[in-house]
Length: 353
Ligand SMILES: Nc1ncnc2c1ncn2[C@@H]1O[C@H](COP(=O)(O)OP(=O)(O)OP(=O)(O)O)[C@@H](O)[C@H]1O
Ligand SMILES: [Mg+2]
Image (cartoon, rainbow, N blue to C red; front, side):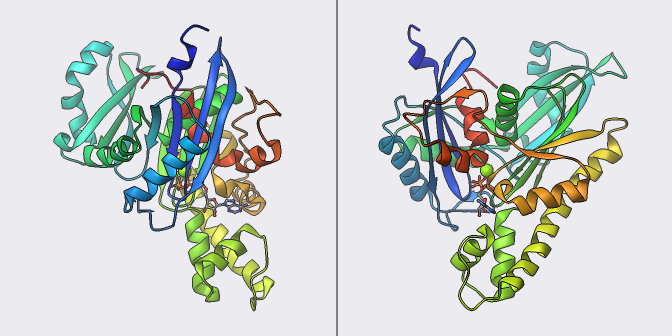
């Protein structure tokens, strides 16, 4: 297609444990995988959602771009965490233009930050099913200094971030393309990363509830480290269930793992209980998992058991053509759970919100 290579953006997800890159080519609604890569970050690079070592992230991004000879400088990226507020609100029916003009005023009561400190965006979801004189709106506010830090690393890497998304919306995009929504069916997308769990409950393609929980794979590692007196590296190894750790009884590891996974699952349950208490008749029929921690069979099984809802790990390339000559399919399968955000970002276009 003429100029087709110009419209595609490089999807880059800066996670707290690694930077992920995905580039796709789109032709008439079909996607093909062009580039994919993951570059690890040291634990102290991003702490509590704050960039502590921007040069390490610039280096990771540059390594991915140069190493894979990725073409194009325009990037779609995303943020998440406590500097980002996502609220579903109800307002009187009005047009997009009218809301654009009044959003600052409308948003004030929902945003716990000074409005001069945040960038505000919104999406009209449609009329309310119970009161058609009202409409539901997804309101998003992100702290400007937080966004500036992220934009800064891309500029330093010689790239141009043209779409700034939110992690859970990018995952929603990936889910939509690969699995699709079924009318009136309620599902939960749950991303269990290194430092955060994000929950997004959707009915058809409309978000009913979102929540970011400050818990993830790091908590399991820290628990192992603390209770078994082992190093961070050993704890990470034990968590993955790979090589055994010298002088540590596998049963002791197992015991800590059970408790740590239990705590994590409990956090997810608390969020979903809150959703259930406020959602009326809407019942979640399935959980779709993403994030590195969802690779753990133990975590998936514990979630299913505790919540009593079937869970499946998302394959972000389920409906994306992958040329076997260019990619190692086993490797793709192994890193797939970590790529839902980056894949959703790679599907974005300039002007998307
Ligand atoms: N097989 C596995 N079993 C258990 N945990 C795993 C496995 N593989 C990866 N992980 C964990 O997944 C986490 C990384 O996942 P992911 O890349 O989704 O996180 P991230 O995007 O960097 O973090 P965040 O989004 O929270 O900032 C790490 O905590 C890692 O230890
Ligand atoms: Mg992540």
